[in-house]
Image (tube, rainbow, N blue to C red):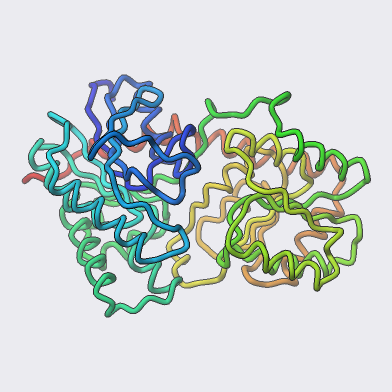
Length: 419
């Protein structure tokens, strides 16, 4: 596709390499800009997921980031641990993109990105005004995730409104793009025509590869170097310390391995950090577990490449029957280290790629077996396994390829939202 388009992306949580996560919208947009397209991202002026919030100068603030035009909509600040503030923020953004006169004259393609589907109404209204193709991009199935993973009631008024909005999006959008490979059946049950579905997973931006030397945070780098010098087998995790990521099971597995050379390094933070530190002490692992804090996105891969194996686990829940696409998995692949993948979901790319060892989710003994299998390998065997995963990633999941696939599929024959 060579004709230039104006692409407008309604993405509440969109970030950038400057602001922090969420990164997917930014990486897609950056590739589209390289292809000569004009891209505008409309995002909430505050989101708890970001490390750096934009500086707002009124109701709507414009900022250019790497050729992408961001329009930050002023929304209420909130505590990321609280629910009411977050709901107010979501509703404020959705109402404003529906009601405010946005400083945009035209658009060829309008994309509304979940997590929360409330913004679909403003996106639909804007697409009709511009006679543009409307695409609904699904990163999480809301409200189903809140019901099955968070325990929310289907009869909660907010959940009801989310469901109505999601159903509206499936009916009115010309295309539905999702990072979840097996979500089409569910979406069809909510009113989507099956021909609308497009699977575009999360990917990796090769332009964002971190420097190979000289830019590692010295304290973290020195701690890891010290552990390696002491002959430790370094097992790593990078991400949020939350219940869904099953880090407590990883601690149990390390304790059961009965190999004193195995040292667990946890990068990140989250509400479970104190509980995990207490658990490590109770298990007698205080000298075998290191909490090294949050690492900048640009530095993650260079640090992960120092490990012997990397862990990714998720709770075993029905919601994952539609698939998963954790962004940290691509960072793991990029680091070219063996991955222990404790997830029950379709499309197991760790097994497909040969980049690690897959095991049953929420099963400590299975995690122990996976750790021991990689521990028993020679360094050369571990290197070969890690490189197999990285090669697969380069062949299948670069954002330069995914961005072109997204636009080609979105621009194929389909009804315009305005008709």
